[in-house]
Length: 434
Ligand code: HEC
Ligand code: HEC
Ligand code: HEC
Image (cartoon, rainbow, N blue to C red; front, side, top):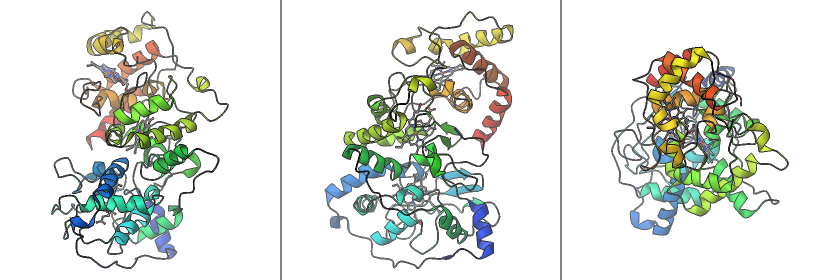
């Protein structure tokens, strides 16, 4: 997994080079034409079946996740999306005519989704994942448009973006798109099943799984040569979804379906961090589409003739509670007190079928980021009845968390203790506080 690059962050623009291109005068179209405003389409003009389909598709696309602030109404925008270049605020996509997209025609909406251009002709930041939405077919976009136009209009404008000096200049984005936006129509692979093709269409397009699971280059664009090889998302690692997936327990179509649909699959850790809302969205999507996604991801994880076992050899079956490293003894006591009630082998949670720490991806990755985040932030299940772990950010020090994670790595896995743990905990804690 390629994560060493400092600026790979989910949903950001490559402002730097765009600026350079702007300077060179190479950016061709700095402003697109405005598309005329229309009267807000009347609700009766939309077929209820189309609206229902749009609701499902909007769930695949996580529109509500980015377009709702913590305190605000759904789809009314103003959610803060932090990037290394400053903070962006999402737009209001309810059909309010003044502050939302009420007077946008379908062609204006379609252009925003597939080319990243607002109705007034200004360029949009790729935090709106148009790198992916550009692959979405017209029929699906029409359904989403109908669904959004049927929402309750909310009058609310987002706060001004708070970007580094100069980067608020939108024409620069034309250069970025010139380099990175590939507007291609989806063409199914004739050698694969229709279900596989449907899955790939949803993963590459609306589902924008690569928005988190594909590494980004220094300019914030996805590295398509490393599709789904693992990326960084809101301070968490989105693990590789190809043959290099780190999970000790083999994923298959059934467990992927279970995980994507409910956030919890037997033998795998629950969907934590930013994967939680993704699973929550998919829980509202019809089974056939989630199954298609699972079929496609499974084919990426297990291409012919690869042995998954080879990459998952690090997990150990036996419990090493009796290991004798004196520096970790006090961590052992801390573990018994703070964590053992849930994670000691034989604890009720494991008896109830949740995976032991020896087998979850977060414990086996080369990078401790997700294990640290899980301890700092806890694990909140996407559905209310799922497994729950409290946040320890306020009760444990950086050094205590470092010692605990060193201890669990030694005790439950064959993998080496992660280096510089205390410094990493401290750095991630600072990121979380931003
Ligand atoms: C990862 C976060 C994210 C997701 C997911 C997302 N958006 Fe957005 N969207 C944004 C941001 C941020 C902007 C504002 C971009 C800017 O200011 O340049 C935006 C802008 C838009 C705009 C332009 C509105 C305007 O007034 O210019 C539309 C339309 C839109 N999004 C629709 C959608 C739909 C429909 C979906 C789901 C299929 C969706 N978005 C999913 C983050 C997101
Ligand atoms: C907003 C970012 C984001 C998006 C979008 C996203 N994921 Fe994830 N995904 C993550 C993160 C972060 C994790 C790690 C969660 C954890 O550690 O519990 C994850 C974990 C997973 C896992 C478990 C991997 C393992 O070995 O434990 C699967 C499977 C998965 N995602 C599939 C998908 C699919 C399929 C899509 C698209 C439909 C998708 N994800 C979209 C961020 C994202
Ligand atoms: C109240 C029960 C509870 C306590 C106490 C608890 N955990 Fe957890 N922990 C969980 C649950 C639930 C999960 C998610 C398991 C699953 O995926 O089903 C989890 C997952 C984890 C993970 C893997 C992250 C992931 O994505 O699944 C790590 C690492 C972890 N815990 C470490 C700790 C440490 C260290 C402590 C002590 C400081 C601790 N836990 C205390 C319940 C608990």
